[in-house]
Image 1: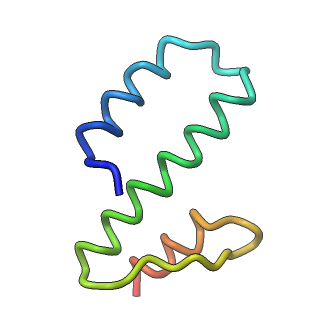
Image 2: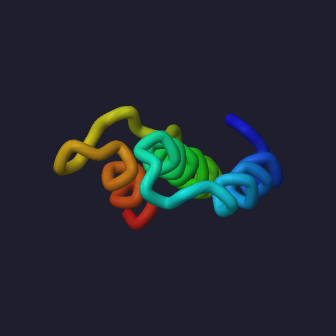
Length: 66
């Protein structure tokens, strides 16, 4: 798992790129998953690899809320 500081730096770099670039959107989704992995791990859980409604991001959010 990448450190949160590295994720933050990458988000800052992506902010300078065009928002309509599909590659940026995919990377933002992946970075969001990484942040939620940190959240779930901080709760003492193993991050899920399952999906909810087709998205792992939603499954991680659900896992962190329970």
